[in-house]
Image (cartoon, rainbow, N blue to C red):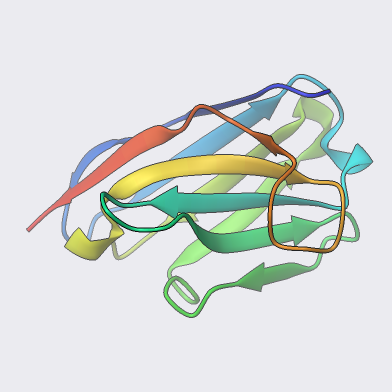
Length: 118
């Protein structure tokens, strides 16, 4: 069992940046991957980025080149640096811990709201 806590959300203007943090209660390296997701009102939860144990990353087309996932293993923290934000990035952002090689997280944080104003 692991507990995840996101922080860093807020209100930002179009073109701005935010960095989200996800603090885990245990070692993030015990998981196959850590991921960032988001869910906008009326839409399904969307996988944005995964950071695998070996350090490799995968991004969705919607954020590739704008968002960067990283980690500080010593602090058991995963980050999502978000640049060039657009109004369509407005959503609740969730951190997830993945035990397997699929796309669905086994553990979730409570989410943090990101709102991008036009």
